[in-house]
Length: 408
Image (cartoon, rainbow, N blue to C red; front, side):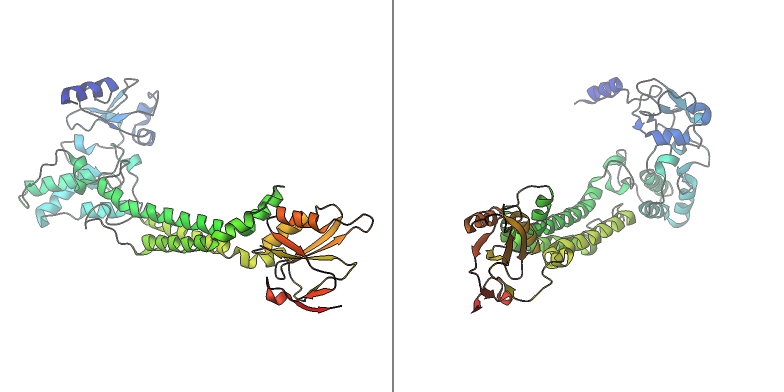
């Protein structure tokens, strides 16, 4: 697009100041509300959509492309430094610095500490640029431009580079601008990666314990949990491994990774608020990861099952014992028990995860359900079951390797 076409486009969109014809900078509603005088605000039809005219010789401060409203420098509560020719000429409105102050420091020492001091305070979150600066954004680019001009004026350093296009100069990047400069974006990228790694660790931990909590959730909503435990149990080691790697990556990126920004750039000192937020989120995520990763280990205490560690004995007339295969945690026992009590004729069911057994009690007033029907219910829950002959005592200390230890 040629310069002529670009100018025509800007004119058509109303981005050019109606007084001087230069491009205006968009400002937010809060800037208009904070800096226009009460008399000027009373004349505003819409406080959104205004643009600031930065041209030094133009008397217009704000103009509205759609409504045609315009306000002059006298309609602003503060002196607009870049439009002033007499001292004092404000340059930093948050921390009260002037152009004359920077020039005096340069004349004496050859440089000024003001730009770095402003940038440091901005990163500490002490700035209020949108409420105090007439241009509605951070002044750091203007401050550094004034510093270079003062150094050239007093012959302290040669004016090596032309800064007519300040938005392309990394050294003049706006430390609190809405549009993130390239170097600043690269500095923030690893922080975003750290948050994504933390979120991935939480998700992996949740899925690694799904073999226990998901069947319980499905039961609560009346849905079938058949096969759910076995599916997630098969992938549990891999999910736990991924959880550990992602969580370690999150800690590295948040606590140990060094910034790649050049010294003195606006991203050399990260925002303390962002750093604190990332650290708090990482610690919270770590707690969540541990809670879910260890969920199968403490579920038994939550539901109060398997308090009796004595051998399970099935006696004729007192119940019917089944050996269960495929249970991976206490949640499986709760899941299977909910399926068994729905079998017609079953009045009560006791499922033990430790002994891998299920004992059923029947209604004596009706014919008891067949073993095949009970096995079908066990299969629908996602497990395998086989009946244990009456009078056999099982040793629960061997888990899946249950063995016969005696007969009655």
